[in-house]
Image (cartoon, rainbow, N blue to C red; front, side, top):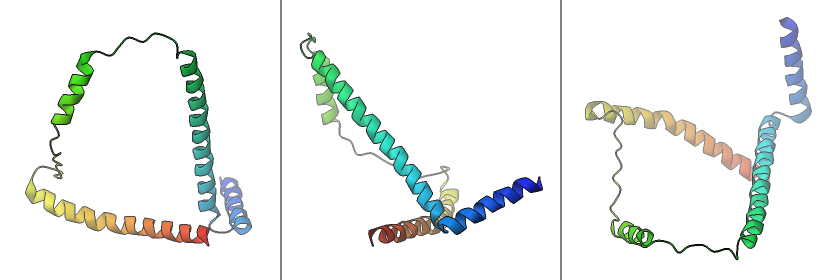
Length: 127
């Protein structure tokens, strides 16, 4: 049991000494870039494959669309009602108002710290 913690601690200490304290964030950023790059490559590969498939199917016969689709689209355009957003959490105003105030005071420092960290990170990357 102690040897696992000893070796784990040694790995963490050597990692931090070698790469610095912000290496964990850079490592996470590199992993996100790797995953994002793989996603972009997959999208481009799928796009080229679908374009090739559409070129093969270009001369095939496709039946005309029915009149119901255009009629449905016209009715949807006419029915542009404003969306009402229900911000109640429990449905009881006695509980909802204090609960929303508590949630605002709870989430504001978290969001503020996160965006401040992002600004510092972006400024560090740009300079």
